[in-house]
Length: 178
Image (cartoon, rainbow, N blue to C red; front, side):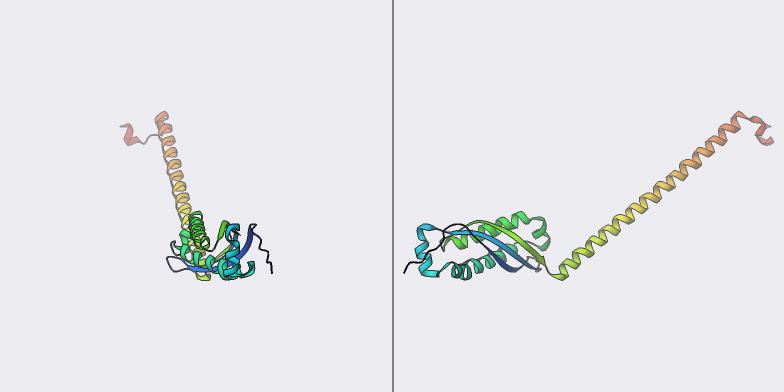
């Protein structure tokens, strides 16, 4: 009996869960583009079965393990700001894991990534606090500018009065005249 296996690039989406270095739960869905190596596809079929079995037994579990390993190297914040490094780490780990099964990874994409509800709320609270802090700084700067404006106005008025007195000696008090 002949079984045909497609050695063209395949795409499968795989959900994964892991914990960051600071123990935040992270869920993701990856699109994994891979192909079976033609030179060993017969052996892969004999050991693992058809394409759906290969995805179920190898690609999905190895993707999940690669994600757990990669994400554990980063804090939750780093997994956001250093996302390209996280993806590179994940790609390297997954490529090494699948290579021994005769599967070549061409690319991976993060389709969806979600943090725990608690972490998302903490991030939102931090953003609100930062905005309130920036608003307080703005209000303080505005008050300082207004105060400086009043000082400048008072200084200007005093100078105007002084100049008027200098040009009109008849307005001087008698004590100054004597």
